[in-house]
Image (cartoon, rainbow, N blue to C red):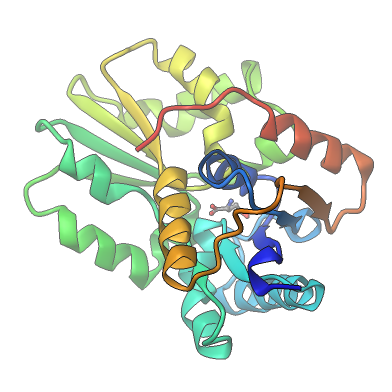
Length: 263
Ligand code: DGL
């Protein structure tokens, strides 16, 4: 088999990375994909760096054993904790990660506040502080560690009273009249986009995520290494460490949700 015909491996701590898979399928419809959600060990965002590294390597080793031509770490938390080590361990594998879309938010900024929602672990990491230091000179950027927000998506809760209470407590205090952009810096959060939009009730606030940028980067890497698959009719496989049909059904349901704004 030609290497370009192998699937692209995707991993996340659960169903969140499906938001990145979705953008990637739109861009690369001929590719085969193997998605692995580690819901059994979710959330990653409240664990230690060492634990996240170990869990990430376990999933990546499994994907590699299945035969993949490239890897997408479709999890901001796993990217910040493990991507350096992954690249070191597998220097021949194209590996693409995701980080909060601060750069595009700042590029289009008109002077208003930018709120970055992400897991507590992503926000604690040096990688995030470095990213922030590149862009926060003249811009009001507020990092917001959203403890346990991803669990709503893992449970398939995408709207309703419990989420309203969460946003009232954790997000509302940071929304000012001049809030311009909310960056969804965890791959689970884009599935909350429709409800968040309704909750904010303010068309002037942009809500963006980094999935399209990640998909574009993957395309560039595959092109550069002559690994694009133009022959196939794309095929998608979804697996989950919880081994429950409910998680697989939820994953497909999320994959088929309408598309959100791009950045
Ligand atoms: N989806 C993951 C991210 O992008 C994190 C969720 C978690 O496991 O805490 O950061």
